[in-house]
Length: 576
View 1: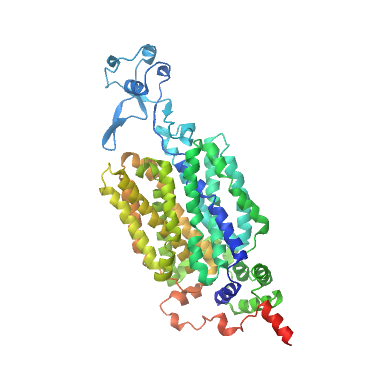
View 2: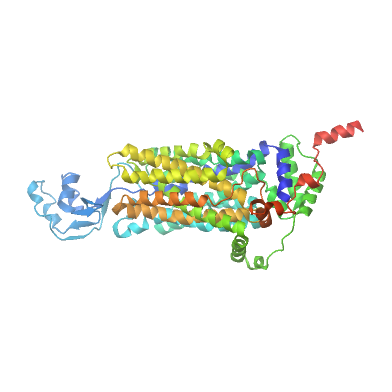
């Protein structure tokens, strides 16, 4: 099997500077994307607002007195609150120059009308998207679009970038996406029209799955023994960036200035473009043996000449390539991206073992997307301090990303994944029975839920990258992740609209979804100590019910002589 021979090569190559340079590409994306995927928390947060009556703005009344005179009370969420969208019909000009007296508040049953202008509470945020374009009341449905359009773009970008990276290479996609993302990120903070800002959010979301392409590339070059550890640890920069986002947002309260400042890390992506190599695994699957040998030879030079000279390496790779069972290309490739996407879905669903894996992954990703992003963006639901919530929520991702590593190594992927889902769901559901006055308890439960859903999300990426075969790995991982994006589209509406009337609804929905994902995760096979499959036949042989009866599953060590590195060759030459 081709993957066995390549795994042996990467084990011989070891973990060194070249491997770190590939992982650095992923880390660079992780240092910039949270500023945009979590952007709704600070660029467009929920802010208190009330109807503005211009005729009362110049008198000496307090804010409370102006509200008592002009704004009616209405029932919301089981209690009485001031209306955000209506004012009494009064002759406000007649009292604009009068001092306040209690007699002015004489009739609270007057007719009302819709507001024309609003004032916003600027004690926390001086400027937001909602403030700038009055996305409240009748226009309140537009506010969640700021976040949801980003997730919608990511949902479309998952299969699109997966297809492009499998067809044209990981390197090409990462270079083009890096340039476009940087330009659009800067432009979106300067655009004067809401429609253009929302369009730019969609484009940024469309490029968000570049991190999945970089992740796949990093996993493809990582030695087998370090793959589990690195697959969990290299996602920690997401947590660090989220914590920094809370800190920067505390210092910079204007959404345009904050977004420009948060675009600066994109420079790291641009600086790596001239030095980026293609994935040797992808080159081998494409039959570009000489190019794969050239990249591996460069890696060997960076890491102490662990591999033989380039010509011998090319011959060895060609032997590996000749062993691989070739699969005829489908004519669907002649008809473009949609046909190839459809072909891959059919390929992933054709054989029983891969079909079971695919459907379980799709379901887990969908439920994880709703829960993870819902908890991450619920600073106004689970806490009174959005900055503290963002920092603490992101801090929970540090053990969430890396703390489960020794547990996963010892117990495997499946039991740990299911347990993380179950604990997260239990913590969020426990908020339903927590008294409203116990704000600290609510915050702690939300953070526990965030900790374990983060661990599940991270482990889900590792599991998917190890279970899906190379022929569809990038597209399959992106298709699975697309389901998470589809789920995440719902989160801003649950938080921004439904929670205004039913404050308990987010906890019920997020907790239930996590519990359901815990049950579905038990359907996945455990990929611990298994080689990466290259074809659908390999998946059937590795995880099917009759793996012992698979005569075609051979390893490189059984058919090829051991490789000799440059030092061994020089010693033999000296001896002769």
